Amino acid sequence: MKVVKSLQLAVVAIASICLSQSASAQDNTLLGAGSTFVYPLFSKIFAEYDAAKHVKVNYQAIGSGGGILQLTNKTVDFGGSDAPLNDEQDKKIGVPVLHIPMASGAVVVSYNVPGVATGLKLSGKDLADIYLGKITNWNSPLIADANPGVKLPDLGIVVVHRSDGSGTSFIFTDFLTKVNEDWAKKVGKASAVNWPAGLGGKGNAGVEGLVKQTPGAIGYVELAYAIQNHMPYASVQNKSGKYITPTLETTTLSSNVTLPADSKVSLTNTDNPKGYPITSFTWALIYKEQNYGGRSAERAKQLLELLWYNIHDGQKDCAPLNYAPLSKSAVKVAEKILKSATYNGKAIL
Image (cartoon, rainbow, N blue to C red; front, side):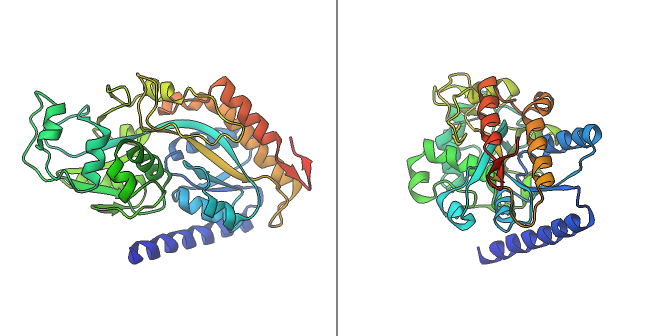
């Protein structure tokens, strides 16, 4: 774990240097860092925003934990996270941070099982037991019982997880905590946990590489990433007992909830009988008071206008990339949150 921690800090340090250099070289470039989960969507939206508004956005996909650390260190304009700030993170930052929902997406369970295509059925309990190291072979009766007619090989399961602080890990472990008491007691939910078993890969790319290269491997990545990289993925049992394939439709069904005023809500283990159970909102995190770290009022306005674009015009890019766009009611919550941001105590929008 010490080696992993050192690697995480090294990655964040390098990203910080890159971002600082970008900031000094291009004062008109907005800087963001964090979630790899939302990276495909952000890449598309930010490119279109630059073409339309001539405002560049340099977003470093270093994981939600890294993005939160960059925001804490005041080296970015916004962080990207798939998990709301916890009490410890709030305390370290020390001032109010706004969570603006950008979209919602699905975390999928991908695997490398010879002869088994997309659609292998896994219950949440069995999935947690795999990651606990209790189910160790693909032809386990527990897996076979849920997959009649599927020829499962006598092949050991190789667990793959994220090695960096990751919102994707938070979503995944949040779900496992809700569906398996043993997991809840021994591991719990967090952006970085003490994994009981397996290999660690950095980012979606690291997990993808390990899964593809390792017969018998199982891992978790964001839906758009799995589709773009032709990775098979499982149908996961939801609270209603139905095995649901992650799609835009099933993600949208899970995301159709009433957002609280601060937008912090968990979507995993949905009550919707047709919804996919490993789903989450992804947020842009900004300081409520934007006069910090030498930021100008104009830069603060540019940031708010970018995020306003994201929750309005940018939503058209969600569905083509398999993210669920914000509902009308969620957009209203996001608008109200953005309008609460200030510069020297005065509203920016």
